[in-house]
Length: 290
Ligand code: GUN
Figure 1 (cartoon, rainbow, N blue to C red):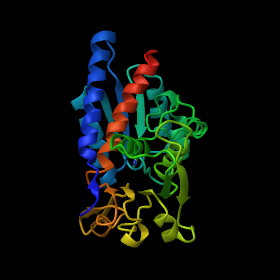
Figure 2 (spheres, rainbow, N blue to C red):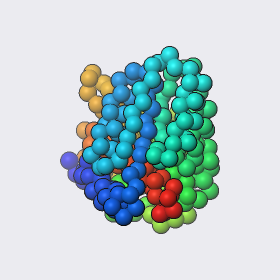
Figure 3 (cartoon, rainbow, N blue to C red):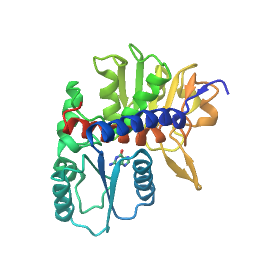
Figure 4 (cartoon, helix red, strand yellow):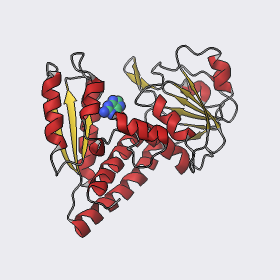
């Protein structure tokens, strides 16, 4: 193995320590306890696991959390009513509705109903628009923010780099491309967004200084798609024969890349770290402290 391993667990722990210190300060100096509501609809096993992890991390850091588990048969109207109630609660600073939602509920409608100042996922159209405009008062979606933070904390130069993003999803591909192409410190990258209709995919990937894989196809990125010494960030979480694998063929690519994230233990832990960070930020903003 020649690549340096990016230890997402260790970096997430650093962020958790910083967040926990901020929370203690808010409690002692401002009598303020950040509060997060996490809504799960149905029994998607991955979602059940993620929501459980988010809830546990809140408890560990001192965030008040409410896990609300609704049946898969919940109507859009019922979920809207719940979101609306949470929008008006002064003890709840962040609201997260776990995706995916059952077919009878439109994610677009639900995300747009969340108070944008409580939208710790950054999926509300107002926050997406602010991110596109470079307005720093937006909430930045957690997984892409986690990818950015990994690059920064590993000392990887983003400025001027060619970043190739595989995938254009609302949750990862699109926002990570916006973050890294911003006119800002630790950004200013040249970003190419590729997707299922892109021609010459392998050649484009080979031109990347930083390759971000978020397409949801197990082991899609092979060694011949990676330039010697490139940084490879694997956002994929796929279950194959009971084993978690990413969107990168790790065993083949690790000998080619300069840096690489493992799955699990790479980007995954960063998502929760940034969610905790965003929740504290929402509480601080509500009280004029940020
Ligand atoms: N499903 C997968 N990732 C996420 C996320 O970051 N937020 C929400 N709400 N749902 C998800």
